[in-house]
Image (cartoon, rainbow, N blue to C red):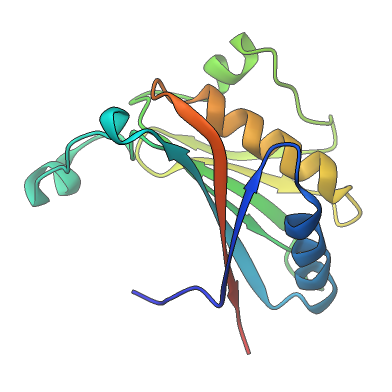
Length: 155
């Protein structure tokens, strides 16, 4: 598995370092960011067996979010893998989370997760706020409020 080029530890009220990196990647269109919420050790799920990972109809119990900037031929996108075992859209709506009407839902799959296509000019603070809110919504684990952004750059 590839190591990230940079890891940013942050809290919901300290988004500037993450937004600066997102702006940099949006300008270059060379990379992506994976987001991981921190969970208290006692709230971590036990590791799933290899058979459980292969045959399970759901994603991870602690969600993983991904933001990919757009480029000339591909629009920007957000993805969230989650362990709901069902569609995430109804849970997100129940949490009162709405994305702009210009966003397009591409996938809501129990195993592969939720994928949303974004317009090229979408404000990155809106994107990041929505992603973090959704990730908190689609888990039953107690989040600490701290997050990790794993930054990957491509050549």
